[in-house]
Length: 265
Image: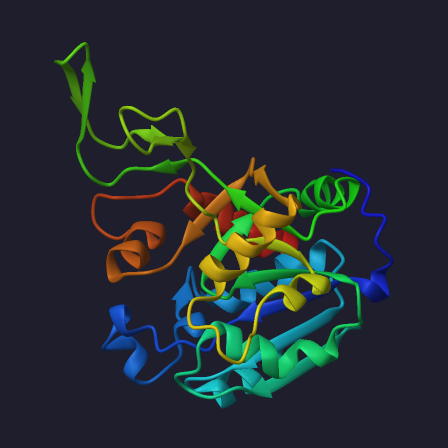
């Protein structure tokens, strides 16, 4: 693990957890998505303690749908941890840019902060990602990861089908047969410098990621970091069943989570 040379009182993280999680209805009719239990613990339990393990002590929660339940859980569960918890009611259907507009004044000027989603299980070397970001004086560092395809993948060479496989690991995507540009799956973890907010109008922005990334790219200060570790976004009931080991499917991260419960306590 790389040395995290960012002082502990400057390790800020913004955890986005305000959406409705409609794809997980009817579960999310009664609880917010980030409180759905995975191996008997809410997703947010893993998220918070993984971040705490990596030294984060300044937590910002832009709340939305059933946000009071999230605030109550975090406050109750982690009240004895030495950290600062900041909760903001940013509205139920508020776009991400406007949520960040409502919390940005909490983050010190010109500082780096970590931006993540509250519905993704993970464990990778966040310290190394920050070192990568800091050494390049980046305004924005995106992350990507390999992922396992849940659909059949057709393999082809010289216009001939060579194989058809399930459960294949995909690391890159070619955007067009006549183009050398490669694509990578966004893992949803971003190191940002607050100065990046000056490039866009957060109040009027309707698509935060696309708008901000395009503007930072123009400055030459946008970078990409490849994650080497565990990553699993919880988006559908199939994902919940997969990681909880329901039926015949058992995702390997399930074993990691069972073990992590011991390490995170």
